[in-house]
Amino acid sequence: METMGDRRARAMTPVRKACFGLSLIGVAVGIYLTIAHFTSSSILACPSQGIINCARVTSSQQSYFLKIPVALWGLAFYLYLSVINSPWGFRQESLRVPRLGSMFLGVAFVLWLISAELLIIDSICLWCTVVHVVTIFIFALVVYDYFSSPSSQIGGE
Image (cartoon, rainbow, N blue to C red):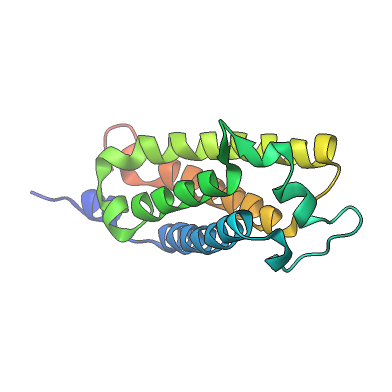
């Protein structure tokens, strides 16, 4: 028999809706950055002079990780997040820990990327910053959801 706590644990709360919506925003920006990477960074709506220089960031050596463009890694990550943060994904109790773990990995990668922008490339990409901020917001929401949902409490409800 399903309990009230079970139904609450699977409900699409405002926090979970925000996770899903932000994941979709991440997919959109990831598509944009991936297209720019494989075509021309000149399509990026971003200054190309001074500290804010998307072209410099997206064409740097640090724009690759394991010989794969970071933009493609980001797009794949957000496609994955769109599935596990979807209404279907939040109904899957087995995805709670992978969701939380993947967000820790995502934030660690974002911290590396921010460090690369500031310390190595000496430029900031505004579109990359959007991805960084979205990732950090999703991380905060997933951590909140993980520790506030009834199934994370000892003894259930």
